[in-house]
Length: 440
Ligand code: GLY
Ligand code: MN
Ligand code: MN
Image (cartoon, rainbow, N blue to C red; front, side, top):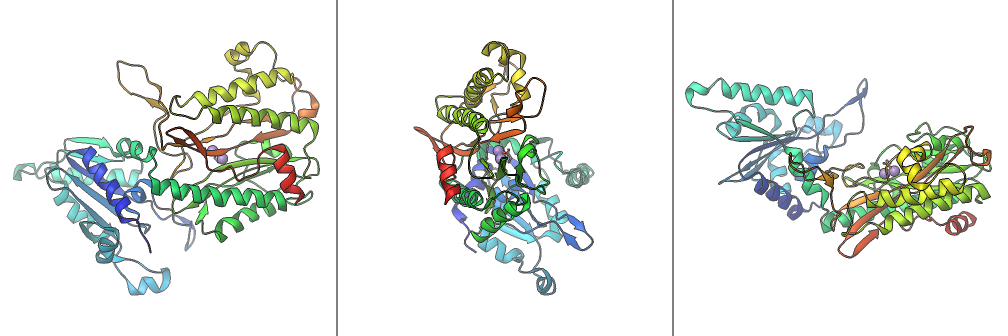
């Protein structure tokens, strides 16, 4: 396996530097049973993976800051018997070599070794509250040390949330991460184009979903980044629709929100297109409105603006459109003020994107008692989605030709020093391009 040692080591060093002193304990995700003898596919914990590049379950990394900094991995033993059943395991020695740790031990030694490492440290960095099992385990370690005070041993007096430090690091993508995310975005964009060519009236939603899985796995992505939404007609107005088991009707739109995970990194794309390859007049009205809102939002993604500027730009376009199309009544300011637009647009215009589809990172800064939190400024190498939409359920105040139109258009966008870079442009998006791809 090719692992980017420099990248992962640099992340650990950076975290250790920002801790300045103390110890950090980061565990990976648990394996979860789906039913008897059968697990859900294992997905490592994003924080653990970010700091290690190590994908095996039952692993913990400990970082020590201060005058003698080091990083220590705990992982499963080599076990020829288990490897016959479940596949390769590194074992501590090979993992230390391959992943560039200072020390590595069997996970079975964790309870013993950790007490020596924790003893007399001033600060502990840990994701308190993330897992009841791990909270209890760490508390037991602290209590074991407290019980030794008369022998001169002390437990850390201060416990900090590790995530606050790592989230800030994860928010800024490195060239290595940007390259991976471009590749993840490319695979997903091609899958969307493929779906546009594949979908036909009377097909089932799951047949189209299968095209995505086919394209994701065939291009080396390890998994969908989240449960794909393949929503024909009225189903598109259910924001987290995931049944994907209805028939696609001639004359309906199909909304697909699907992205893949490549070496841990998510893509997140939504496209909406007519099942029969041709937008109706009413569909085109709403589609053009959402697309105009999306262009306006993307135009705000640059380092001169704060996080909320794209959302505000999208809202401005959408609200004017809702008024023009007689979906909302009153002035733009009044519709914004009353929130009447939420009948048709009830979510925000994006989120950070990275190892998690809704990635780590604060949206407001700074947090202090003296200054109210403000939307943080966009900065180069942040990655976000831009995804306005419009969802029109049947209602007395809505012209009938708009009923059951649900549209979202979502791209993955990198903030650059001079503007932004849309990573998912390859997925057809304009009315003309979509109709053209669907003809082919
Ligand atoms: N696919 C999840 C989202 O768009 O936020
Ligand atoms: Mn999204
Ligand atoms: Mn999405």
